[in-house]
Length: 315
Image (cartoon, rainbow, N blue to C red; front, side, top):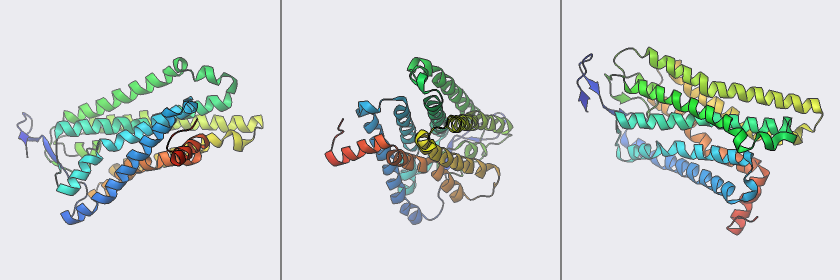
């Protein structure tokens, strides 16, 4: 295990072990097959959804392009940690360098943050489509919608980069990460000194990214429901496009809160429990989001069926 001298501490670790799923190697190897299958489902389902949307010109409206963006996020997250996990399960190669750990942490949290941000963009799209239908094309033109893109992207990048930079500046007196990937709290709890600033910035990031997004999403859908019932429209028809988003929103929120609170309420939780909760939060949306959108979105479902039946997308 690599260690470096530190002027404030006797040693600091620069190489770590991802404990992840602890237990006999034979038991760990049994987990390789289910995680490989889940990974293949997540990658293939999201790639297929992206292909369907990008290859069919009729699906190039803002709503479907945002679904495509969500599929890209769901595709990216597993790629940054599942291959490493599979190698660890199969060959027991669990070492990771500090630089590799920080890089994995940045991309995992960066793309993870965009799960709620894309859902916010979807809520804005539905708000304009239902509440201001006559001016929908003006509001959702790329030049007009750009302000909703730039600010969240900069916010997410700055906050996640701050979290990762603070974590990289710590000295580490322990080297076993109680997780299957480099999650922020799993790494910083190994630090020698105080991690108060890391906790503050981490909590600030949680409240400024996913919590702020979900509050804005809630406000948007409250306004949508109020507008629908006030105008006397058929709620089933007007809100049919919102139901899918709401299902995904609640599933994402529940899994995110479970993963977040698991580190801050019960510090005696086993590494296996942490790993299972985190895998649910990371992998389940990647597997089920494209299925939910494919089943519940009529136009996407039609193109999927045509592709499966004919072997190509039919206009």
